[in-house]
Each structure stands twice: as C-alpha cells, then as structure tokens.
Image (cartoon, rainbow, N blue to C red):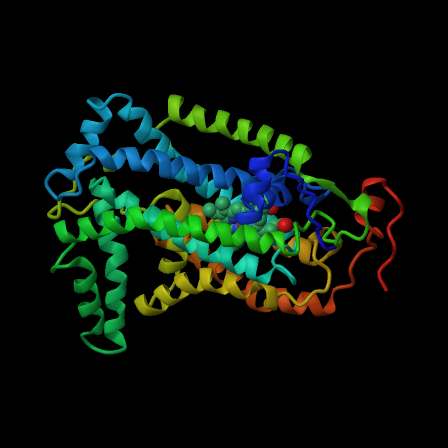
Length: 416
Ligand code: HEM
C-alpha cells in the first residue's frame, strides 16, 4: 500500500523548512505515522535494540579512544590506565566490551527472526543483503577492536586469523605470504599492525551506520514483514508506528538495558577470556587460542576441514552463502509458521549453530572433531540442499486470509 504523507507543518518555521529541506516530513512519515503490521511480536524489537547498541558502541568508543594509546609498548598499559585512573574509565570500557557481546547476541536473534519468518524473501532481498553486509562489517569491527587490548588472547587471535591468508600460497606460491606481510606491515603481528587495526576499528562503525540508514530505507519501501508473512491488505491490518511500536520497542529496550547492566555491574568479565589480562607476548603462545564467543561457530567450521585453504573457504562461504538465501529458498510461503517440514529443519539449523559454537571452544580432536564435521556438513546441506528441495516438495499448512483474520483468530484457509 502506498504511504501518503500526513505531515502538516505546525508553525511558520516548520513550513519554511518543509519547503526547503523536508526532514521533519520525512521523520514524521517514516517514524511517526508509518503504517506497521498490527501483529508484530517482540522479536521485531531487535532492530531498534541493535540501533541502540550501535549508538552505545560509538559513543563509548569515541571516549575510550581519547585515552587509549595504539602503540605496541603502551596499548595494554593504556587499557589498564583507563580501568584504574580515568574517571569512570572502568564503566566506559566494561560497557564497550560487554556491549560488543550483547550487540552480537541481538544480531543473532535478529537474523534468526528474519530466517524464521522469511523476511529475506521478495520484496525484501536488498534489505536482507544489506543486513548481511552489516553483519560482515560488525565481525571485522569486533575482531579489530578485540586486538587493540593487546593481551595474550587478542594478540594470538590476530596472529591465527591473519595467518589464514597464507593459505593462498597453495594456489600461487608466495602470494599468501606476501598478502599476510602486507596486512601485518612487517614479518609478524606488531606495532604497524596495531595502528592499522586501530584506524580501521574507528572507521568501520561509521560505515556500519551508513549501511544501517540504507537498511532502514530498504525496509521502509515494502514495510515490515510480520509473523504471518502475509502482506498488509487493508487499513485494519496496520497501525501507526508511533505510539504503538515506539512504546513496545522502548519497553524491550529497557529490558535489554537491565540485562546489559547486569553484565556490566555484576559479571563484567564473564564473556571474556582471563588470558587477555596478560600482556601480549610474541614469544609465548597460549596452549589454547580461542576467539570471542560470537566467532566460535565459524572457528568450528574452519577447523572441521583438514585443508587450511578449504577451511578458510568454508568459513567465509558459511557467511557469504547467506547473501543468496532469498534465492536458495524456493517456497512461496514466507513464514515458517505455515511450513510444517521446513520449520523443523530450520529449528535444527539454529540448534546446529549453537552446537558449532560449543565445539568451536573445544580442542579439535576426538569426538569434538567428528561432531564439528557433522555440524559443519549440516550447516551447508541445510542451505544448499534442504532449503531449495523442501521449498519444492512441501505442502504449506492452512493460512489466515489476512493479518487481521489471524489476530481475530478467524479460521485459516487450507492451502491449494
Ligand atoms: C547494526 C546492525 C543492524 C541494525 C541496527 C538493524 C536495524 C534494523 C531495524 C531498525 C529494522 C526494523 C525493525 C525490525 O524489524 O526489527 C530491521 C529489520 C530487518 N533487518 Fe536489520 N539491522 C541490523 C542487522 C541486520 C542483519 C545482520 C540482518 C541479516 C543478515 C538484518 C536483516 C533484517 C531484515 C530481513 C529486516 C526486516 C524484518 C522484517 O520486516 O520482518 N539486519 N533491521
């Protein structure tokens, strides 16, 4: 349904501005009067929560950067200086550190919501693709930020991950080594690596912010999907974004802030690794190098494959494949609610992703390795085989005639 502007300037100044740069009209039409499905559940509050997370990370990060020193011999000590000497520096750092984890928790819920309700399907493909690009940029940002602490775990995580590019040597001898040394700015991870990671860690959140604007723009062309996956058909299917969803989003955000505060004030290091409180030492490799929890599933995929190059391809491929989800899923029905077979495979995919996370933290040997391989296989089989095939053969369940019918509990219409 086309959305007609309902904005009316209230004063002469607003009228004057509206004729020149109609930002007030845009804000009113997009965030006040925007027609939104009336049946959105709490999973739809995570987009707002993510916007909040990005703002918190940027605000705390900018202040942290005023005290942090991106220099090999001073980085670790400057973090301790922030923790002990800077007024409320501990709070800033713990918010930024736990904020990164909660940002990922929220984004995983946001992605899972999109997958369950088929929000990636037409006409929202570009919105979804921008989302995947945001996710990639978030991963790069988090990885670089973690390295800045210059503790044992972050130093060795950077060493392991940047070294992956050396697998290119098996395609063109010397290519991988050249790329890795170019990334390092030397012959090992060191001062020049740290300064470039700092520079990019500061830059990327602004790129993410730009992508988020495009993401919301792409959302507001078709409007939000909803738990039924059925489009808005009449006026009664929609309500205005404000006050209904501003209140719902505000409440969910408050709950999220309580969880956030619980971590920051009561368990600030719960999501970290104790070895990162030991200063980086290039001469001592920790026996067990593990990334932050939000990277563990990908780490498990990397290690499940015996060839270094193929492991790297599988790891990047596992995220890259998400870009093609709108076309890998062949079903005409959006919401998994009405897809009796797909729903169970999808739920198993979520369990599988958590299992991969668990396995990523374990040493790649014995039963852990075997399970790592089984879960990696399911990840790819689900996306490349189950999604297209189930879409072709599955008979969807009976669906409500409209969003309103669903809300009012009217009898669903059996699928043809
Ligand atoms: C910084 C990260 C992100 C921010 C700030 C963000 C923001 C938002 C907002 C505000 C919405 C509308 C509210 C909602 O539906 O929850 C939304 C919707 C959506 N986002 Fe994101 N997003 C982010 C990352 C992602 C990622 C990584 C993906 C997918 C890979 C994604 C896919 C989607 C989709 C498909 C929708 C439409 C949902 C629907 O209408 O059913 N987003 N996003």
